[in-house]
Length: 247
Image 1 (cartoon, rainbow, N blue to C red):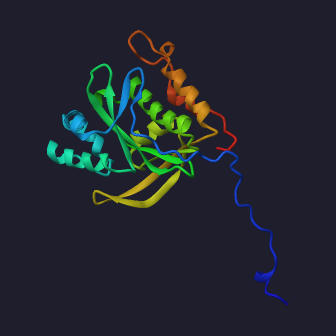
Image 2 (cartoon, rainbow, N blue to C red; image 1 turned 180 degrees about the horizontal axis):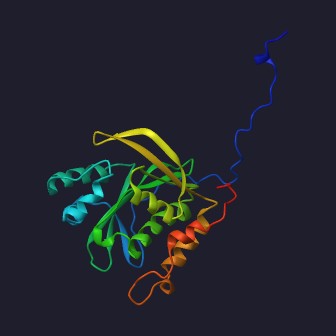
């Protein structure tokens, strides 16, 4: 009698079909402009001075490097040398954030873990100068990055990863509509310390509703004369029902 392992067995399902595969586009180093800010492709010779001041100009500014894998730097020349390595990379693709109000560059972010044929991409390395943090402009900035990848380039999965101890980043992810997926323990060694990594994502079937909620929150009607939001973006995201993906 044949061994049980040799008996025929039904082939397990290999996953649902993808009727519209991703177009396989890589993000361009191009300007992404909004009402309050614009993303500019990282150019160290143009952006280094403003970025160094934004990330090193005060004790509060230095806190942006607490959970990032690099930084801070002891001086502008060493920061400039690091910026050049980032500008020369194909993954990540880095951008510098310029405020329309001040005209200065006050933050950075980039696309990484770019897999065009799978439609997977991540925004990361995000940091803003203290004056820009928790502002309408900062939310608009992140919406621009999300929209470019999901709408213009047709990605089907947007990732957000951060140190599991970084509560500000985890709250920001949830506020923007990312759903928590889990924690990779002992995932990395960063600056000589262990990093457990929290994973979040927005999927293509979730994105239209997420985009609409963010745009509604950014609308002028949601802000009082002093510029304060009348409604919470986090609460609006929490009220979303599960989507077709079951999340």
